[in-house]
Length: 340
Image 1 (tube, one colour):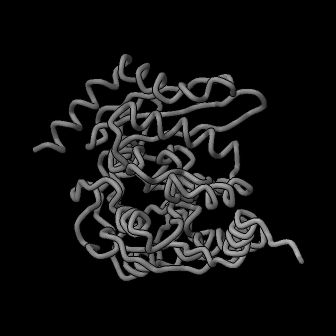
Image 2 (cartoon, helix red, strand yellow):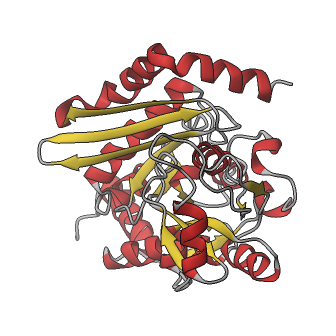
């Protein structure tokens, strides 16, 4: 008489077969950039022999395209719908532009992976001759900081961080609101009488939309985690956590953790004029950060090298140091303005 298989062994094999045949549901927003990001994760999973499909979900930030982001005052406006779908088991993972993700993830959701960072820089997409733009942007300040020429200039952005940094450098310029996905914003710029608009380089470059009439704003510090992509899943889903661990980029994860802890230590919201950039150089991390008043008139900065093995507490310590050296006054002014 043939021996019968042990019931526990059958259950184990059933689980293995289910895992190998299960199609992972990847939640994404509908924009071209969001779909590109989710497709990259799908490719990484496929390389590990795991099948996946995209599930499209609209976010609040995609529905209201008129109200400036900083006036909407909602953390996670581009991620909350996907978080809800994840917790309700409509999807198995979600892919986000990391700079859009609140520094405190909802209960029950965990960071599964951070992809290798692309460009963190901001770009000015300008209209007209570059020589004229250069003249407007680079001949206005004298060596003593006095104004030489106040060329009229209008730049569009929905980012309060970009707005504050721009007005700090060019206080006589006009800032106008620009909402929508990358394609929509490029079209609005083309149809407007603005001089230019500010975009994230990574977003344009990922979908091959960076135009020739663009320049990198080397003086503008990025949003915390700009250029990075985050994958999240249910915190109890060990299969997804294990599947994503193979494409988690350690240096990007470390740098973005420092930047996001810095943001949380100052104010905690993504719709604030706070910038941060951490870069691994050898055995240390070079950090630059700042906080500005909304009108750009006040600014506090910090620059520091941190030992790589001290990254876990670095972000909050840097935030406390900046608050103690002028940032507290600015943070309080932002709180007062946002609570009005």
